[in-house]
Amino acid sequence: MGSEMCIRDSAGGFDNPTLRQEVITQGMLAAFEELARTLPRERVIDGLVDFTIFDGLRQQVCGAGDSLLVVDQQGRVARCQTELQRPVSHITSPDPLMDIRLEPGGFQRLSPANKHECASCIWRHWCAGGCPAYTYQLTGRNDLQSPYCSVYKQLYPKVLELEGMRLLKWASTGIQHGVEVWV
Image 1 (cartoon, one colour):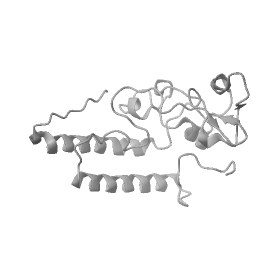
Image 2 (image 1 turned 180 degrees about the horizontal axis):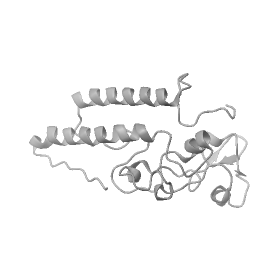
Image 3 (image 1 turned 90 degrees about the horizontal axis):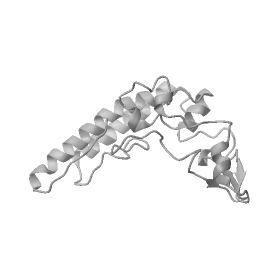
């Protein structure tokens, strides 16, 4: 894997980001239709779209750059598995986690409240601004919305609909099911 590695993206040969987003959206909607036919008793709302978890307000999508350490075979430490080619520390460092947190280059973790396009979005607490490493890789900036923002906005209402359908399906069983969604 070289520096051309795509972060959390299986482009599948699509050079056009809009086409790639449409293919992802249509594929996910088709998967949601199948899931709707066989809704389980268990909560399905979390994890259907990227790292989204609907049970609380989130300011970060993951621990990259803060609480995540990725170590390669030579003991080099990177901020994210997608940045193994750009280590910022080594396991022999007195505090590799602090080295990760203090790294000034590359992607930086910004709260969605600090991203212009995200600050007023109703979905900001669920997508948490998207993958900061991927956004930085594609845009060279940390303060922009995720390149997959339009995908999230199309899929989140469907995820909520699926969970509602699941709750209604199993409501007659006498087993109390519920979902708490923070907005």
